[in-house]
Length: 186
Image (cartoon, rainbow, N blue to C red):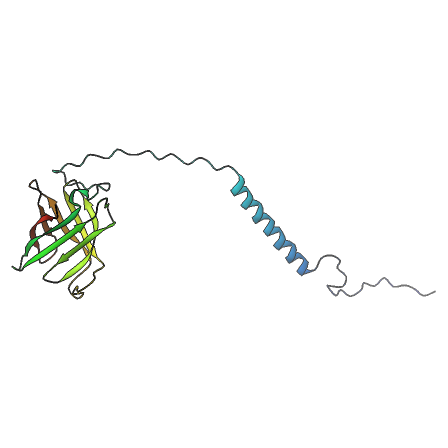
């Protein structure tokens, strides 16, 4: 009888192992990750969310003409309409200014238009800040025959409603200008 040797067989690394291939493990891992993501998504969407805190309105102080404070909820209704009048800048140039303001205009909204004759500039006005009688606008979106080399977007157009019903005009940029506008068309 031949003697059987108990010699170890050479290890090949792949042929002797029983189980799943690398590709199968990758597929299982991918499926497991997708299942976990799906479960987390379901929990987030189906689990009741904690109630959001209620917003409590804060009282807004009544604007005071003597106060420099600016109100964000004041509209430009006090000066709504068409205004026109003469103005003069610090270099001595006289010019005509026209302002049109629509009702219910609030901070950062387009409010109407402005035209300055001598430059010329024709643009949209946006309410920057306001109190009950003082309004600052910025001008942008120049159109028509505007001199686009001179007309610059920005704030600094100030209007103050006077007790006599006229609108005082001033600028905070150079050359500084002042004027007095009257309401047109009633």
